[in-house]
Length: 361
Image (cartoon, rainbow, N blue to C red; front, side, top):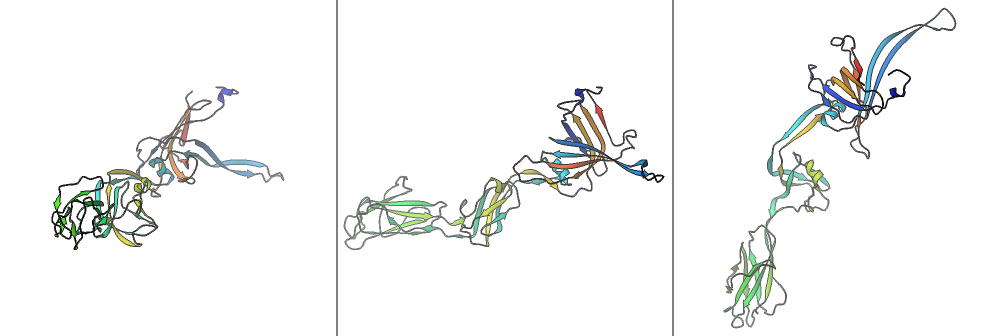
């Protein structure tokens, strides 16, 4: 299109591809860089001047080009590991995490701090005491109105694994005061539970279940009345700390394998604990930062302008250098800058050693 013409005006856009060389400068495959809102191509020519010494004006007698350099400043917005490796001057890799279940991993817990596990995306976290607290069979306490005046005591070693309340009720009163003859009882687990078979009451302890025992006693003139009920609370051996109270996790913490120990935790400060958790199988891309000897490759630009002619650019051999910060925290869409420098590739492209632009429409 000849000039002047408004059709030659240009509002640029396009796609950018990069093929990173390996250590032997072999191509490894063309990859899309994603959304690149800035591609500023820059040609720098360095000259020296020779001033005339034949008159006072010292006018320019001659000039010579001493250096030619082509580079481009790009802003990359897609936080793909391969893109980040360019901005961090790093190399890519994979962390292969095997699935498994971890039991009794010993860690030290500090109030107001975090425990870091050796895995990602963990689940089913339990924090346990090294030595569990013993189970408890609580004292039998009157439940509701008690008409009789006999004594009921609880005992035993609870072998269950849940916190429960047991209810013991007199179903038949003694035939005479001070004597347990004729007395019967029944029991249930939980207030909404169902009473079982009646049991004859004697002076011997009666075993309910799971090691819980109850004993009935009458002194002279004492008796039990039908409907008298006692509640016996029980709790199992306490090996686990309470999730959400003694330790806390959430999706973000679990993703990084962290457990929070709040200041209000029942875990004593600087105490060793056991931790159980589940590890999922996973393959996690990683960037080993600042480990690249250099970042070299082939760069391709496919123009698709909003206004103007489409140009494709081929950059035969370039180096990439980070050029700025990577905003890992912010309130705007993040991006990072890199600088591309064209190297001389006269060996393979003698007529266009740095790059070329091709007008395609």
